[in-house]
Length: 241
Ligand code: GLP
Image 1: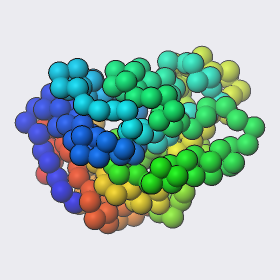
Image 2: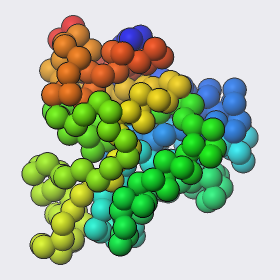
Image 3: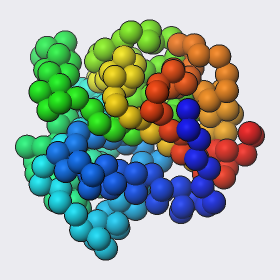
């Protein structure tokens, strides 16, 4: 795996953002998988800044969110849909029909999982998948223990995330929150993947994921097997090297 360590947090956001911009410029009809969270919020801000300063053609690019919270309204400001809409789709002028998102609400989630995969496949598969990493090594909502063969599915929230989402979303106390997520296999089928990690809370897990055994106990460790994977780290996330 290629490892890029940036000089500062700002440089980290900027380097990841430029990777995304470059893919769109090189392949205007690229399909790009995005992740949400604190890490990518900074990346998306940098990307919007690049686009504002150096506009490029976004009329044919497809972006999709790799995961989404289920059983909440799409309108709540913490849904992945809402974050990507505000952070990427609107600032870059991406066409609504080229923004693919799993639904937050459905009466048949397994059908939605298949439909989401089919929609991405119909556009030619994924050129670039951007990934954050959870402190326990999760990718998307694929928690430790998720089989490497997994395809798009609904995962259970871990307790911390469940509590955070309930707090932020005003979800009903009895709502059965889940995580709609592309699977590990889908991630590995992307032509290129970038794992973006910053901050001292990620240092230990980054070290495990990049240098430890490849095991479903650390979902991100699977990226060691990807032929075109790059980890981009800020100085803090890289500090235990
Ligand atoms: C969340 C999301 C992931 C994200 C990860 C890291 O659970 N489902 O897609 O990559 O956690 O989030 P953060 O960047 O906020 O640390």
